[in-house]
Length: 465
Image (tube, rainbow, N blue to C red; front, side, top):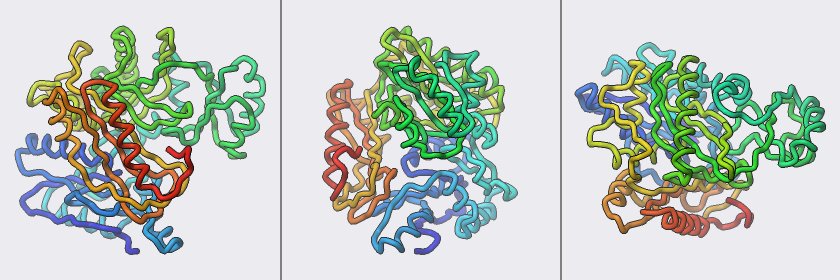
């Protein structure tokens, strides 16, 4: 396989471009940014997306696909192979790609500057070393520091309620510390490395054997905290523009399977108004602290809420959340026409360090325009796929149609890999977005979508989700 798996991009000399570099699931955010930049720059704007997703077909204009892990596995399996590549590895591959470097210089030949837009700012992205190229996003230095779980628990415990925790230097210290905690922390011990997302590199353990089964004998730095039994797992999406200004987009309820494995979210939250107000207050405080640390842009805060409505902080994600596109589509239906969407607000936060005068923040009193839910169909063991779910609609348009038909509900399956593939463990086989007028209808639609994806799998573990 060549360096580029697929590309269909072309450059219009009368158009100003930016580059999106990241997974296909966030492609739709770029359309909101493209529209905003067109208004701001008063000229035609478009984007070229550089993605790692290996699919049967691509129903998207202006993309380039790079995934060196897939190229290696294709030679081994002699069959179409799709796997998820770690974001740092992808960013390194893109940064040194002759194809992409040439594309960057071609764009700079016709425009004075080039923005790179990413899901998460990572230091492995080095294209901005080229004169004229800049990252339209948070500082990668600030993002890396603030995404460190140990740093968060050490530096945010004066802002938000945090469970009891300890920091362990390596596996022996982890063993010695947990040995004395099992009797007191009888509900379990949450163990994570400094960097972890969606359940990777973390476990809720009730014995040492469960910890060692997860981490073997790896000498990481570990954060351990007292597991708090709870009823709800809210997540809040927000944007920080400076040390004082934080925009809160909304609250969704996460679906956490197996105690720590994120598989999707639902909106609106079912939490009481009082709890929602407290969550918003805490998130603003966290956002101001991020601003003091030099962070600008979109971020997310995750919490747990007990049956008695006690709130405990879980983590900050100093990057875009998985719900960012859905919140854009929701706010577009809720806010007045012309109100800036999240990518436009982030643009102002990054470039001006303040929000535009036209900013409209949703309030807790605003009635939700639509109910929605997402499900990330992530496989835990390698599978073969023998069925294909074709491209079935634009997510943004589905939000618009459903919000204007009060009796409607629907779901779309997006980014399905395709037919006759071997799919590596940890990969997303597809993503389901369900829309409706109540939570029950959304859950029913999500279940239907999951069943349809399962029909495309030739062989899998029955517990695989």
